[in-house]
Image 1 (cartoon, rainbow, N blue to C red):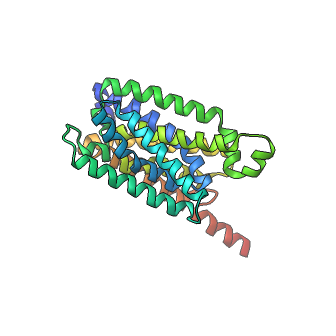
Image 2 (cartoon, helix red, strand yellow; image 1 turned 45 degrees about the horizontal axis):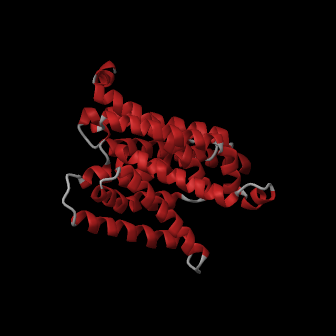
Image 3 (cartoon, rainbow, N blue to C red; image 1 turned 120 degrees about the vertical axis):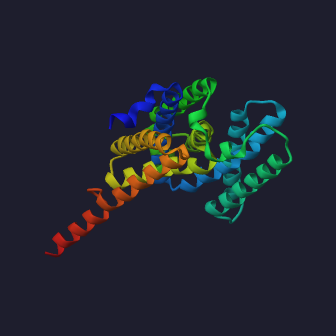
Length: 282
């Protein structure tokens, strides 16, 4: 067992764990809002839509994170604009917008000579993260996490009851756009850890796990963060020992936790519901 944790002696492993834990906590908190609001596909849409922003920022000599954030925000706002001004439903609008953005990014990438590696953008490279990226991720991630936690009750109200939020004079449209902005920024932060393809799992699975365990929101946040952080730490160590994709290992551990919760969660797990049904019949 001690040998499993031996890689922590290396600096790059400590950096990966530090960044991974923060990204996991940040994504887990946002995951609860996305699951409750039914915005799981929005995380998928924005994570794919950032690609053209990354390429255009590279061409313009700007920070890649800035381009990714702007592209992700444009995708979210474009989806909202189409929903408000047409008969197209939100999930359909997301599919049109994010596939268009992602295709545009692939075309730009194929026509741009660069040292960027598409596989690092798609699947991340947390074990190769640089010191400057560590500080950038820590700063942005802490900001997203802090704002989300401070405003969690207002954000929860607009997720559950927008009408009540308006009655209470809460700026519901501003809070909606703020939640979208936090989501876009979180995806930019998480890209360096798990990449475009796997970031959606980080934003959905922890909230799903917690939703199977409890109905109380504060407890849901705690369960979501605990599952995300533990799966990230375990996934990083497993990826080191088997020399496999770190992001892939993290998400596989999360998936294993989800299916375990689906079966054995004491409140809404399959086994618990079957037991309750048998007791009710008797």
